[in-house]
Amino acid sequence: MPTVTEQTHAPEALDLPEREPEYVEFIRKKSDDFAGWYNDVVRKAELADYTPVRGCMVIRPYGYALWENIQAALDRMIKDTGHSNMYFPLLIPESLLLKEAEHVEGFAPEVAWVTHGGSEKLAERLAIRPTSETIIGTLYKKWIRSHRDLPVLINQWANVMRWEMRTRLFLRTAEFLWQEGHTFHATRDEAAEEVAKMLECYRVLAEEWLAIPVVKGKKTEEEKFPGADYTVSIEAVMSDGKALQSGTSHHLGQNFTRAYDINYTDRENTRQFPFSTSWGLSTRIIGALIMCHGDDAGLIMPPRVAPIQVVIVPIYRGDEQKVTVMRAVAEVRDALKPVARVHVDERDEKPGYKYNDWELRGVPLRIELGPRDVEAGHAVVVDRLDREKHQVPLDGIADRIEVMLTEFQARLFGRALRTRESFSVEVSTREELLAAFAEGRNSFAHGPWCGDSACELDIKEATRGVTIRVVTEEEPTGACAACGKPATALAYWARAY
RNA sequence: CGGGGCGUAGCGCAGCUCGGUAGCGCGCGUCGUUCGGGACGACGAGGUCCCGGGUUCAAAUCCCGGCGCCCCGACCA
Image (cartoon, rainbow, N blue to C red):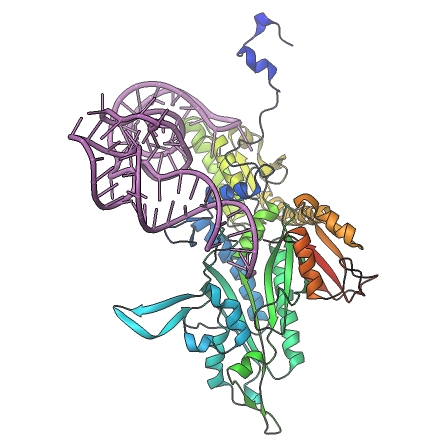
């Protein structure tokens, strides 16, 4: 300890820890206020913002670049599994929407209507699509004639609108972007195969691209899509312990094809109704990414979809150093281009400002390059997950960065998996199930279930909102954890977004 | 749809109780000094105080009526 006469700093500085803060807080703390933290991250990382339009957000360039990367990955999978993209109208005549009873009932409360064209009142009002089964079915009625026309495998990337009571950026907005796949098949089994195949695509997207571990399973009667025979989904656990449905795939049976009179002639020359499916994944998945991976410093982007994977922050003083440093920066940038999405931050700001800024935006790797580094022939690479600083030789830096990005992706997934495990609890009695959610606690509970809707609603009531996210094929052991009746499935209970 | 909160500079807010020149912080612009974890100084630009009525010599402030947004519940990808 320095004596008083040796002090070179303000006296109070001596009482503070030696260590510099690792980051500065510009956003609310995740542990204090999860919802506030989420909002701050979305807006300050410039993913999205509110607009003058009720419940509708603007997706800003950084957020849209992320969505485009997600889209590109999923679009590839959709095409590789034999589907073609097309585009249907935004507006759906009311009469079309009304044909499938359950479907209407499910969506009616949240449909927005167009009632006028110019100054003229329309004879029939038009719904702004909340989903497109009805318009697509109506058109395919014209095009499906023979068993030779099947299967129909199509997808569209579109916006849809649902007049939600309460909205949250990305998680629930009145207008959102998604893809909706729609297929028609000759047999129930073939449609079932399709439903499973597309859910698997969603799992791959979530786990392998977004580093979000998910549970695949079937929705209960309470939670399934209006008009579906059954719905399957991928469920992810956020870092606050709440679950988020992140992609769904529906077996529509013949419900829609009967309602819309879509039929074909089979080999035996008899009239048949095809079986249809639909499946969708929306910009909501970005909300999952944020809540799954983010920390107190902001976002953490999975490298495979990160708009910027590596950011280079040049450090220099004066023009002479600038020339030397920028030459090295250009070399590193060019070396990295073939292996990574790289960005050089040339803004006229101090390095510390840039560090915080890029951490908030979740860029996986940051390269700091200053005169000392150029001199020594290395770069300082800082990892967004643990903020460890690594000295990496400039010679062969691209190979090293490529490996680091791959490792980052795997570590991020591992971390998310551990988070989910920390909320996971196996329950076999009602007491255990209720305890898992006591006093507003969040858990991801799994245990045997009887399959009864009344039982599910009873738990929802008793816990103020806990629902069965999915049930899986796994063989249940023991009696229903909720009510003690014989179990028919293994269920996952959680509070959900 | 129930409950709560808020509309004042780009953003965050104070001022309103008790009417009298519209403020603070951040950000923004110019210049200078700075630059290895959000620097500092000087000067400067920026306002239908959500809208409409009313009271008053005078309204951001008081009264009446709208509108909008956010948060918490019920419903939902």
